[in-house]
Image (cartoon, rainbow, N blue to C red; front, side, top):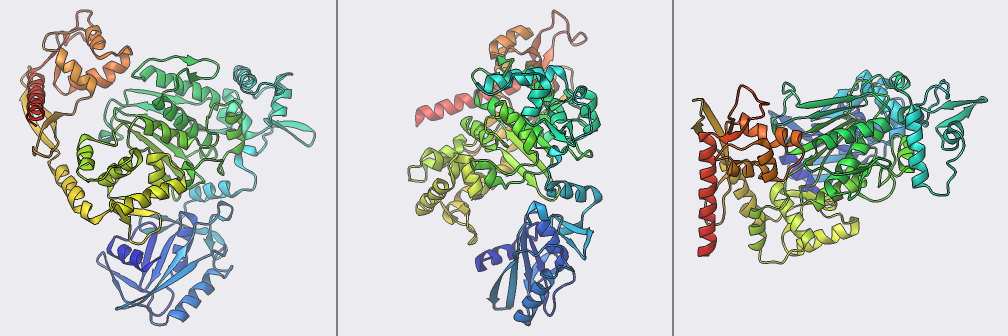
Length: 622
């Protein structure tokens, strides 16, 4: 840790990758607990010579640096005290108030976890927030499964190969294998095929299936025997993700307890059912013929969830939640690679190598392994903000969010135009991200641009030369928006957030009060411009609903053909918000049903049109 980074972290809150301890005269007793916690999660800095009081930190200094440093290293190298000898490094900084020692504790390799104390595995710790917590029994088991020299999916099961496989799934898998691997031996009976490709292995003269074989190709009862929980839980909500709460009921839900091949088919059926635009899928490959970016990202994210989950964890369930504005994927089991490594090409260490191999063998996952690069590439091509990854080493879970939010807004285009420099497409994307977040690291740059490491670093250097970003607190690979731009754009952004929403109240036809949130977006010459939180399709509905319209008429106007999706995602939110009303409200499914604007809806339309007229006049005058 550099001096600059130490000072920056001292001014911020103590968090999951740094721990301050007073340690004036001796090594604090809790230090080894912090070492265990950092080693079992993602590493971190342990700083001696800093005191915490009422949430603030002050330098008190270390009295005898050499003695304290030697005592600490003696403890962390004592196998009676800690289970693993870690390559801990130290930096000493002399400050006016006294000297501090900054120890860096790296994450331990998975084979050495859980790192524990006093030869007692129950004395293993993880880092959560700003504290060290003792591992629970379930958390210990997760570490132990991942540490095994034989992976969980490679273990053999004492089952009869003639009974434990699903014949239809094996037939489909073999057909896909032969199509994907011309010239390879796919002939012979099923037992021969399964043995040839590692689903069956010989143990003491018997052919036994691996756990991967059952999870991928097994029949229902055998899958449930090995995995006594749901394989994946699919949920559709008509709300935005920000409105989600456990008490909110889903609009559609499917729970899957089949093998992974049948689970993927069920996930695809769910996706097709609720897709905004209809498309065709090859029944053999389960692929779209045109493979558009949004489908590629969804497919790779769903397959990633299926094949990389911790199948030994019966306490948590993988979940895919679809919201109006994003899709979320939760998996029990963290990625064994870092976020930056996931974005780099090439194979990575994986939890379930046999399951990954089974999917890769039939070309179901384009990228092999996690396919994270394909997820980011598809989302980048759509112009959306990069997918969000939370790879929680303490919880041992993986979360992925695909947000349908444009990265570069009109306001950001104006900001770029005001810089006085010409930005490339990649540079503009990084600048737009900096305006949103203030800071960026190399993984973010890779996610935004798709560039490999060396090219991403060159891009950052070009932006530094143009004084658009600077190194963040002396931390290698992390950058911040340049100071002269920070006050200009981030300050205005905070003001915009405070002004972003206002609420207008209108009376609906039934006399009830309807609150409609109106977005406020400042421009260079106007402080506010009235905008509605409507999707493009909803605005078309509003435009066409001065007079009563049928469902078919509204779908034709918006270009949608998937009736159920159109109703759930676009029509019903307008009805619930009091913008639209039914002409036959007591018979929702009536053949004579029509939809028309309420008085609140008419007012919203008027506001939107007035705003559009004002903007047009402004552009003409300019």
